[in-house]
Length: 417
Image 1 (cartoon, rainbow, N blue to C red):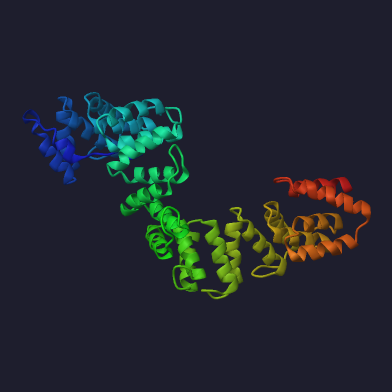
Image 2 (cartoon, rainbow, N blue to C red):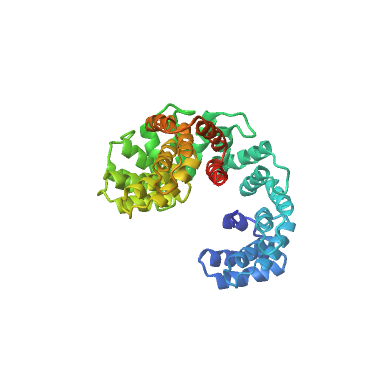
């Protein structure tokens, strides 16, 4: 929620009796805040709404006086009650975020609405946000879309982006991918990174526009250069596979790294793969392990599996069956078939866990899309009695329940003792 001040608008309110506001505005624009504060203070006390708005803004930002949100609210209110649209908007923001006044979404809505009645575009956008999130008003996506449209048509980039999202999702408005592209384009041309990224995705998938990989790369790059992690990852992936751009592993590593350093788990995993395979970077198991771990700790199942493999094989780290089992379990809990298969092997061989054919068979059964698991399942079956097969089948059913794999194994092993 931004606060605004428009010198041109305020200057248009000048009357001959308050001509001194010219000096205040000139000083403010020259960043001579001490003089500006003095000029506005005199006029504000005399009831000049524009000066009151300016004075509130200067207290808000701590310009020419110590920052004081309560004083900012005081002067915004005086100007707002005189009908100053910008002050009404800024007072709404103060209520919205709870600065200088107790947070009160209903009051924020009241003041935003007053400003919208005068056509204030920023207030239109913020009122749309309030309806979209159900703050101070019942949640109403149709109302949100209506207010976003009003602001978007006045050129508010964030409103253009939000309206595009609503068209893309069919949220509060009939789904229309072509309209989504149109509004994303308007926002993207104003430099909104998320809009540039989404526009790239629409071009990549051919949604609302003819599929065009070159355009996708172009928009991803614009967003990526602004620091959008998802776009950085996508650029890296396109270089990695040579789609929409010449295959270039070094460039892939470059873009994966940018996204990974921002915490993007998929990029962290992908960067780990590049180090593990020596593509675009010198083969380095230690670096691979580092990036797999970062992604794994964010819940990336494939990274958890790969981390398990590295502990299993002692690549970039001391070989450790217990750690291998720990990471295989995390990935297996998310249904990763390779992790299910490898965890089954650990139980079959008694590595890092007690040897148990019943558990091994149940894991192999869940991972049957994996050919190795299918073969190992036959081996496990040959080692088991009919009673153990039934027990394993029951265990497999329990393990298949959502988020219940490791709990089911623990319960089985406890009851077995």
